[in-house]
Structure formats: structure tokens, C-alpha cells
Image: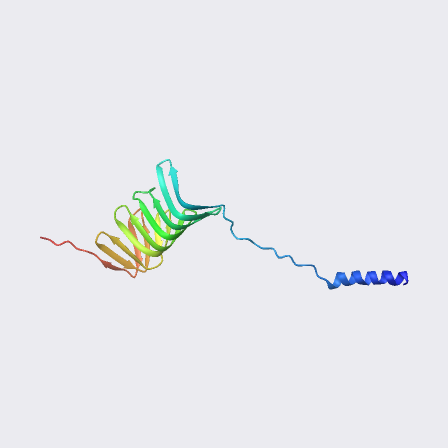
Length: 172
């Protein structure tokens, strides 16, 4: 075999590899949030210069860099005038906002309570918003509606499609 033919075959083979074979495309995967730790059967206490301000209990929590995702959350905020307690199946605590989902029971120290399926509690403004149907009770009085915005500082409610049962006292 002639040496020129040998090198020609080598060069043709290298060009064939260069132009016919494509390199593997490596896909870059973007991973979601990575949990920093997980807790089971826990209680978190928040202290300030005023004393104990927040208690959060739960069966399981996953802590990310910016939020907690909690199962069977029991959240108590005693930083304001009235102590407010919220119980739900699931909760996300992020940036002083607690997003509650599933069988929510909100109770306040003065006897006010409401039931709903979804609610958001802003700890800074102390406002609870339930964008869905709710049932609120204060003593024997009951209100039902399709939207609730409750200001825990002022004790005021805003609601849509409301139906109220209010018990009046009889004069003797």
C-alpha cells in the first residue's frame, strides 16, 4: 500500500469523524429549591424584647432558605393585643406571611372564630384573608360568606355574599 493512500484514508476518516459525528449535548438541569433540613413533631418559639411572640407546632416541616412548609400546622401569634391561633392541614411560612390550606380554624382570644379551606395571614399587618367560603362565629352569632378579610388589630371584617344569624336579647 502506498503511503499517500494510507495518509489520504486517515485524513478522510478524520474529516468524516469531524463532520458526521456530533458531540453529545449535555443538558443542564435546573434543580428546584433544596431543603436545608426537615423536622418532625416540632415546636418553634419566637422571642422578642416583648417576650414570647410566636409559637408554631407541626407534625412535619421542611425548611428551605426562605420558607417553612409545614404539615398539620398550629400557629399562635401573641404579638398583638389579642392572641390569634390558626390550625390547618398545611401551611407555608414565608416572609411573615402564613399561607394556610385545608380545614382551617382561626380563633381569637375574645371568642371570634372562623372556618375555611384557604387563608393567608400577614403577620406584619395582622390581617387574615380567606378568598373562599367561610363560617365565622362570635358567641351565638354566626356569619357565612364567600370572602373574608379580617383585621385582627382593629377587629373589623370585610366580606362578600354574607348571610348573618344574629341573636337578639329579649327584654323582660
